Length: 230
Image (cartoon, rainbow, N blue to C red; front, side):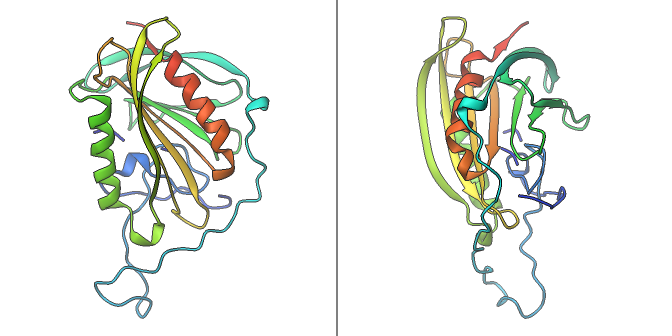
Protein backbone atom coordinates (compact mmCIF):
# COMPACT_ATOMS: atom_id res chain seq x y z
CA UNK A 1 0.00 0.00 0.00
CA UNK A 2 1.26 3.39 -0.85
CA UNK A 3 0.99 6.80 0.68
CA UNK A 4 -5.00 12.43 -0.24
CA UNK A 5 -4.30 16.16 0.42
CA UNK A 6 -4.21 18.11 2.25
CA UNK A 7 -7.38 25.44 6.40
CA UNK A 8 -5.57 28.30 6.82
CA UNK A 9 -2.63 29.55 8.82
CA UNK A 10 -1.34 26.21 10.02
CA UNK A 11 1.94 24.73 8.84
CA UNK A 12 2.89 21.16 7.97
CA UNK A 13 2.62 18.58 10.75
CA UNK A 14 4.58 15.32 10.84
CA UNK A 15 2.44 12.13 10.49
CA UNK A 16 3.08 8.70 11.89
CA UNK A 17 1.22 5.53 11.01
CA UNK A 18 0.56 3.24 8.08
CA UNK A 19 -1.99 5.56 6.47
CA UNK A 20 0.26 8.60 6.67
CA UNK A 21 0.47 9.18 2.93
CA UNK A 22 -3.27 9.82 2.66
CA UNK A 23 -3.63 12.29 5.48
CA UNK A 24 -2.78 15.94 5.47
CA UNK A 25 -3.23 18.89 7.74
CA UNK A 26 -4.08 22.49 6.87
CA UNK A 27 -2.13 24.29 4.18
CA UNK A 28 -0.23 21.13 3.32
CA UNK A 29 0.96 19.50 0.19
CA UNK A 30 -1.22 16.54 -0.77
CA UNK A 31 0.00 13.23 0.52
CA UNK A 32 2.23 14.63 3.27
CA UNK A 33 1.97 12.69 6.56
CA UNK A 34 0.28 14.22 9.60
CA UNK A 35 0.57 13.09 13.21
CA UNK A 36 -2.06 10.61 14.30
CA UNK A 37 -1.23 10.41 17.99
CA UNK A 38 -4.09 10.95 20.42
CA UNK A 39 -2.11 12.36 23.33
CA UNK A 40 -3.78 15.24 25.17
CA UNK A 41 -2.94 17.52 28.11
CA UNK A 42 -3.63 15.99 31.50
CA UNK A 43 -7.21 16.35 32.62
CA UNK A 44 -8.74 16.64 29.13
CA UNK A 45 -9.70 13.00 28.71
CA UNK A 46 -10.11 9.83 30.71
CA UNK A 47 -7.26 7.34 30.24
CA UNK A 48 -8.23 4.79 27.64
CA UNK A 49 -11.09 6.95 26.34
CA UNK A 50 -10.98 8.91 23.06
CA UNK A 51 -11.15 12.68 22.99
CA UNK A 52 -14.52 14.12 21.90
CA UNK A 53 -14.95 14.65 18.19
CA UNK A 54 -13.94 18.04 16.89
CA UNK A 55 -16.46 20.62 15.77
CA UNK A 56 -15.20 21.85 12.38
CA UNK A 57 -14.48 25.52 11.76
CA UNK A 58 -15.75 26.47 8.27
CA UNK A 59 -13.20 27.83 5.82
CA UNK A 60 -13.86 31.31 4.46
CA UNK A 61 -12.21 30.49 1.10
CA UNK A 62 -14.35 30.75 -2.02
CA UNK A 63 -15.12 27.32 -3.48
CA UNK A 64 -13.16 25.96 -6.40
CA UNK A 65 -15.42 26.05 -9.48
CA UNK A 66 -15.40 23.75 -12.50
CA UNK A 67 -15.90 26.72 -14.83
CA UNK A 68 -12.67 28.33 -13.60
CA UNK A 69 -10.52 25.30 -14.38
CA UNK A 70 -8.25 24.96 -17.41
CA UNK A 71 -6.12 21.87 -17.89
CA UNK A 72 -2.77 20.96 -19.38
CA UNK A 73 -0.85 17.74 -19.79
CA UNK A 74 2.09 17.21 -17.45
CA UNK A 75 4.74 14.54 -18.04
CA UNK A 76 7.07 13.29 -15.31
CA UNK A 77 8.96 10.23 -14.06
CA UNK A 78 8.53 8.50 -10.71
CA UNK A 79 10.71 5.82 -9.12
CA UNK A 80 9.47 3.33 -6.55
CA UNK A 81 9.88 -0.40 -7.12
CA UNK A 82 10.70 0.56 -10.71
CA UNK A 83 10.76 3.74 -12.82
CA UNK A 84 7.83 4.84 -14.94
CA UNK A 85 7.19 7.94 -17.01
CA UNK A 86 3.61 9.23 -16.81
CA UNK A 87 1.53 11.88 -18.53
CA UNK A 88 -1.63 13.31 -16.94
CA UNK A 89 -3.99 16.27 -17.29
CA UNK A 90 -4.14 18.53 -14.22
CA UNK A 91 -5.30 22.12 -13.59
CA UNK A 92 -3.18 24.47 -15.68
CA UNK A 93 -1.88 26.80 -12.96
CA UNK A 94 -1.20 24.18 -10.32
CA UNK A 95 2.51 23.83 -9.69
CA UNK A 96 4.45 20.58 -9.61
CA UNK A 97 6.05 19.64 -6.31
CA UNK A 98 8.56 16.81 -5.85
CA UNK A 99 9.79 15.39 -2.56
CA UNK A 100 13.14 13.59 -2.80
CA UNK A 101 12.09 11.44 0.14
CA UNK A 102 9.06 10.19 -1.82
CA UNK A 103 10.37 9.48 -5.33
CA UNK A 104 7.33 7.37 -6.21
CA UNK A 105 4.98 10.35 -6.30
CA UNK A 106 4.52 13.81 -7.77
CA UNK A 107 2.13 16.50 -6.54
CA UNK A 108 0.42 19.42 -8.24
CA UNK A 109 -0.70 22.21 -5.88
CA UNK A 110 -2.82 25.32 -6.23
CA UNK A 111 -1.32 28.70 -5.32
CA UNK A 112 -2.77 28.56 -1.80
CA UNK A 113 -1.56 24.99 -1.26
CA UNK A 114 -5.09 24.21 -0.12
CA UNK A 115 -5.96 21.89 -3.02
CA UNK A 116 -3.81 19.41 -4.83
CA UNK A 117 -3.39 16.27 -6.86
CA UNK A 118 -0.92 13.56 -5.82
CA UNK A 119 -0.01 10.91 -8.39
CA UNK A 120 1.86 7.73 -7.53
CA UNK A 121 3.06 4.84 -9.67
CA UNK A 122 6.05 2.56 -10.16
CA UNK A 123 4.94 0.27 -7.33
CA UNK A 124 4.50 -3.50 -7.64
CA UNK A 125 1.30 -4.23 -9.55
CA UNK A 126 -0.19 -6.99 -7.42
CA UNK A 127 -3.63 -5.85 -6.20
CA UNK A 128 -6.85 -4.94 -7.96
CA UNK A 129 -8.14 -1.41 -7.72
CA UNK A 130 -10.84 -2.58 -5.30
CA UNK A 131 -8.32 -4.43 -3.11
CA UNK A 132 -6.21 -1.29 -2.86
CA UNK A 133 -9.26 0.63 -1.68
CA UNK A 134 -10.18 -1.96 0.94
CA UNK A 135 -6.62 -1.94 2.28
CA UNK A 136 -6.68 1.82 2.61
CA UNK A 137 -10.03 1.85 4.42
CA UNK A 138 -8.68 -0.55 7.05
CA UNK A 139 -5.55 1.57 7.48
CA UNK A 140 -7.48 4.82 7.82
CA UNK A 141 -9.94 3.34 10.31
CA UNK A 142 -7.07 2.19 12.51
CA UNK A 143 -4.91 5.31 12.10
CA UNK A 144 -7.14 8.38 12.23
CA UNK A 145 -7.92 9.39 15.82
CA UNK A 146 -11.57 9.31 16.86
CA UNK A 147 -11.57 13.07 17.45
CA UNK A 148 -10.58 13.74 13.82
CA UNK A 149 -13.98 12.43 12.70
CA UNK A 150 -13.11 10.19 9.77
CA UNK A 151 -16.25 9.74 7.65
CA UNK A 152 -16.55 7.74 4.42
CA UNK A 153 -18.79 9.56 1.95
CA UNK A 154 -18.62 7.15 -0.97
CA UNK A 155 -16.81 4.16 -2.39
CA UNK A 156 -17.33 2.92 -5.91
CA UNK A 157 -15.93 0.93 -8.83
CA UNK A 158 -16.29 2.01 -12.45
CA UNK A 159 -15.06 1.10 -15.89
CA UNK A 160 -14.15 4.23 -17.83
CA UNK A 161 -12.76 5.02 -21.27
CA UNK A 162 -9.29 6.49 -21.18
CA UNK A 163 -7.94 9.22 -23.43
CA UNK A 164 -6.38 6.42 -25.47
CA UNK A 165 -9.84 5.03 -26.24
CA UNK A 166 -9.25 1.90 -24.17
CA UNK A 167 -11.31 0.76 -21.19
CA UNK A 168 -9.74 1.02 -17.75
CA UNK A 169 -10.97 -0.05 -14.33
CA UNK A 170 -11.06 2.42 -11.46
CA UNK A 171 -11.93 2.26 -7.77
CA UNK A 172 -12.60 5.32 -5.65
CA UNK A 173 -12.80 6.22 -1.97
CA UNK A 174 -14.14 9.61 -0.85
CA UNK A 175 -13.93 10.67 2.77
CA UNK A 176 -13.65 13.66 5.08
CA UNK A 177 -11.81 14.18 8.34
CA UNK A 178 -10.71 17.08 10.57
CA UNK A 179 -6.92 17.03 11.04
CA UNK A 180 -6.81 20.46 12.69
CA UNK A 181 -9.84 22.76 12.71
CA UNK A 182 -11.27 22.57 9.20
CA UNK A 183 -12.82 19.58 7.45
CA UNK A 184 -10.76 18.20 4.57
CA UNK A 185 -12.36 16.51 1.54
CA UNK A 186 -10.28 13.65 0.16
CA UNK A 187 -10.76 11.50 -2.93
CA UNK A 188 -8.39 8.59 -3.55
CA UNK A 189 -8.65 6.82 -6.90
CA UNK A 190 -6.83 3.76 -8.23
CA UNK A 191 -6.55 3.25 -11.99
CA UNK A 192 -5.71 0.14 -14.00
CA UNK A 193 -4.37 1.31 -17.36
CA UNK A 194 -3.16 -2.11 -18.52
CA UNK A 195 -6.46 -3.53 -19.75
CA UNK A 196 -7.04 -5.59 -16.58
CA UNK A 197 -8.20 -4.65 -13.08
CA UNK A 198 -4.75 -4.44 -11.43
CA UNK A 199 -4.01 -0.98 -10.07
CA UNK A 200 -0.85 0.57 -11.51
CA UNK A 201 -1.62 4.23 -10.73
CA UNK A 202 -2.90 5.81 -7.56
CA UNK A 203 -3.99 9.43 -7.16
CA UNK A 204 -5.46 11.54 -4.40
CA UNK A 205 -7.31 14.80 -4.97
CA UNK A 206 -7.96 16.91 -1.91
CA UNK A 207 -9.34 20.25 -0.85
CA UNK A 208 -12.31 21.63 1.06
CA UNK A 209 -15.88 20.33 1.22
CA UNK A 210 -17.12 23.29 -0.83
CA UNK A 211 -14.71 22.21 -3.59
CA UNK A 212 -16.28 18.76 -3.96
CA UNK A 213 -17.81 19.21 -7.43
CA UNK A 214 -14.60 20.66 -8.90
CA UNK A 215 -12.40 18.06 -7.18
CA UNK A 216 -14.53 15.26 -8.60
CA UNK A 217 -14.15 16.79 -12.06
CA UNK A 218 -10.37 17.03 -11.62
CA UNK A 219 -10.29 13.38 -10.54
CA UNK A 220 -12.24 12.34 -13.64
CA UNK A 221 -9.89 14.26 -15.93
CA UNK A 222 -6.85 12.73 -14.24
CA UNK A 223 -8.17 9.15 -14.30
CA UNK A 224 -9.07 9.31 -18.00
CA UNK A 225 -5.80 10.90 -19.06
CA UNK A 226 -3.10 9.27 -16.90
CA UNK A 227 -0.90 7.19 -19.19
CA UNK A 228 2.38 5.33 -18.67
CA UNK A 229 4.68 6.51 -21.44
CA UNK A 230 7.23 3.66 -21.16
